[in-house]
Image 1 (cartoon, helix red, strand yellow):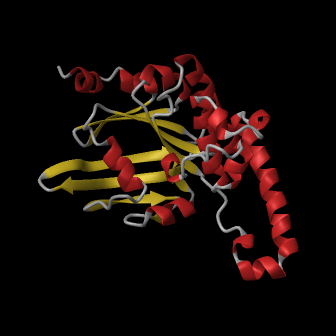
Image 2 (image 1 turned 60 degrees about the vertical axis):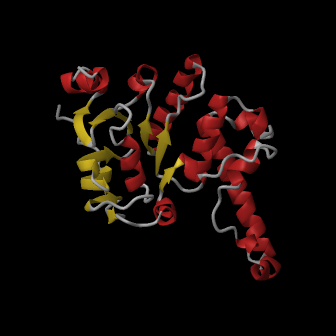
Length: 259
């Protein structure tokens, strides 16, 4: 039997350099994120993880290199433009409206509701009513994907920390995300429940083709659910590969232990 073909890269970072004055925050960073994968980005504080994500999502522009998403050079584009292309950071979705229901929160992520135009609202009322019905059906579908369909009519302020993370993901997908960047999905979540969140993320990647890039410090809680790991130190990628390969790499161990 032949080997499985490698998945196409949905995101490529090519030789990215970012400086802040005399400090080199990113020093020629290169990486590829396969479509439909879950990739973990690790590194000690100050390694460049957040700067890299800020460059990828458009909050910072690099001095050198480029970022390519779905074959499109997005280097230097605004966060809004990048989000509309389908690359979404969960914090780009406004915090859940605490007094709205779970379903209402997911629907709030929809862009371009035709009823928002007062002129069209009067003329095309039947059209945007149909639009609302389709969006509601889509929202229920996504809530099923993340395991929150039974909570659809509960207010957001009744959700647990883990359920809030799942609601963030649902809202990102409703916005049109094909790739989601999450910063510490395990933060504030009971360790026993982190696995259920990561199971949902893995399901969305494998069954729905949604790509995830995750920054997480609680590595032991998430490593078994990810496909690939990139490790950074001092603005450079020092290791990449499977979780076992990277987490047992001497350079990675040294960067965390400082030895």
